[in-house]
Image 1 (tube, helix red, strand yellow):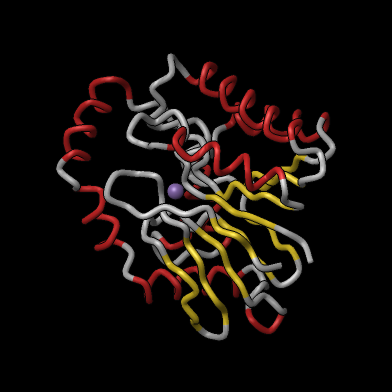
Image 2 (image 1 turned 60 degrees about the vertical axis):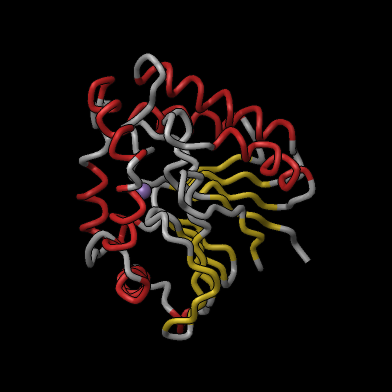
Length: 235
Ligand SMILES: [Mn+2]
């Protein structure tokens, strides 16, 4: 039996995320795991508080290189989300994947047997793979939001706006229906053997909800007022 874990929406380098508090748990899990998936928005290029995109890429790559080097028996996978679909980051990930045997990255999804991992931004609206690619392409060279916008968002965040917005935008059934429609579009729906889907993005936790013969999981996000879990994965 393989041991596997998935974590989503760390939003590293965004100061509204408490990603650092969870690092010891991530390391402890990876130390005994065969597979570890970072399921998108692991790095937040839109809201990074580091001085510039280069600095964010460097810090992110230091993190992932160190993580993969420490646990050579663990296959480390980085699935991209919208916030880390960044041109320079993609080039750096590709380079690391060539150098580090146990490290891989995936622009849209990863399937391992009957288990499927994707970020979940396909739940924004009904999206085919073509529409997802078009939506993501707008993030490739997306500019950082800067200090002023970041401070304004801090204030809204303290008021809890993000929790209400996430719950309103992503009610369970509609979210699962949209993820399912995407799986059908790319030919990985129920009949092809996928029966477990792990996703993130919505910051609304989902724990083992069955929909159209598939079980869905979402570990939430490490933000104030939102539940967050590193999930142990059945393979
Ligand atoms: Mn996202």
